[in-house]
Length: 311
Image 1 (cartoon, rainbow, N blue to C red):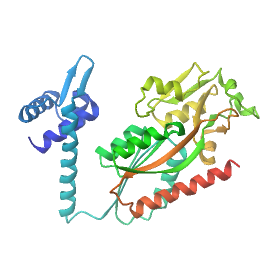
Image 2 (cartoon, helix red, strand yellow):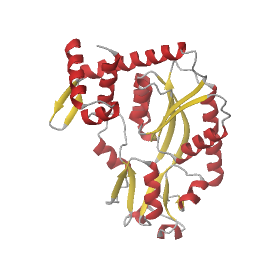
Image 3 (cartoon, one colour):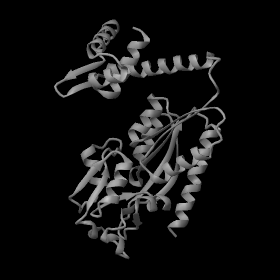
Image 4 (spheres, rainbow, N blue to C red):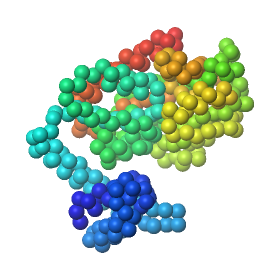
């Protein structure tokens, strides 16, 4: 077993595909397969299980990968510590929901930074499960997760189990977002029944502990809407909304500058009573850096701007 084998195993776990992993690692698939067989043989376990539908991680494989990621993080830390030629570098990492107010805060934060040294920033938009896993397994320092208030206890139990600090940074009702060319833009009051003929754009990967994806989608999407487009990437959602007047989306409040850029309108739905919350998470033994605090302060500034805009 060597560090290369560990890197190979982690990449396969990330992609669940020998072909994709080989391409990312700039090696051949036979070479990658041979390395994994040697690794499994030396450990006496099966890290991956090959099925007709592709590759899946075994329970032993999941346990092994936790150690492998930890080892590689420590190796990186040692190399960085003793690399005297390396410039001082600002590091920042966070996983967040697909939220326009958070991305705007990040953009403003980066724009205003006075960077006299190196910068390594990771900003990942994803669902709550991956945000939690990124902190546990991938060395991300911060996360912001979003969920309905009714699921609060489920998430608190999970976060306590993962030894994580959590604090609510925003409570809100979802707003409706649609093109300024939509007929909805002319309505003074919008009710859920008014959405029935429209196509709902929704996130493709919601998550709540102990709930199946199919059940969760039924709870998250509008019950009276039978036309849905599931999209992972926030930029694509904005383009769809902008170019398709027959679409809409439930969103956290969006800054005016983005509404103007994409020619969108956001409005309240009179009979929408679901409350959502965005929750900051990080490991209990992690101390917020000055960089972290500055970014969180920028989120507060953008959030207060939104509250004033919605009055």
